[in-house]
Amino acid sequence: MENLALIGSRLGLYMGIVAFAILFHGLITLSLVLRAAGIRPLKHLKDMSGVLLMAFSTSSSNATLPLTMKEVTVKSGVDEKLVSFTLPLGATVNMNGTALYECVAVMFIAQAYGIQLTWMQQGIVVLTALLAAVGSAGIPMAGIVMMSIIMTAVGLPLEGIGLILAVDRPLDMMRTALNVYGDTCAAVVVAKSEGGLRSG
Image (tube, rainbow, N blue to C red):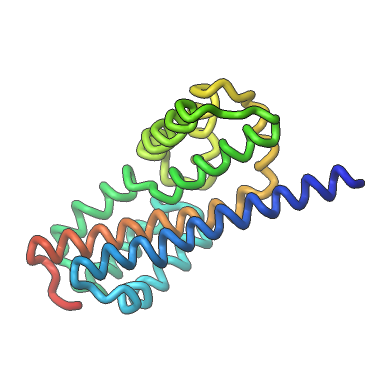
């Protein structure tokens, strides 16, 4: 029973760290990017609330893409040509939430197995997570599949993925919402720089 309680507390800590990192990136880092581009972050967040709810509930940036394109065009005033280029591209390659999650998850699995990763291995985790996130599909739980690449690169046992599988669904919902929100932020920043923003 003590072991189960310890595992539960460590999984809870893992989930808390991932959730905190996702919220920090979404609410602080991306807000600073928007502010630097001259866009009001709170207004943009409010305008994208429907998109974020859809992304959160479906865990799929691809399923959310039609609504994202509509809302960024209508509510943020981004030109349709820019929306048609930036958002599908973002839904394919801009998986910042997935990359963030995979780094934390691999570090957690390494600690659970008592494996100390060197600085070089940690660098490989970060680099491989970024590359794997780019190749990750915009469907539910795609990040779990891509994580096997990262774990193989640093010599971690693949069965370690089973440690986090039980708690992956809520984290998948959160990272998908971050992925989609990052896409909308990129779209409005590009539109602002290219003069394709009609408002805000």
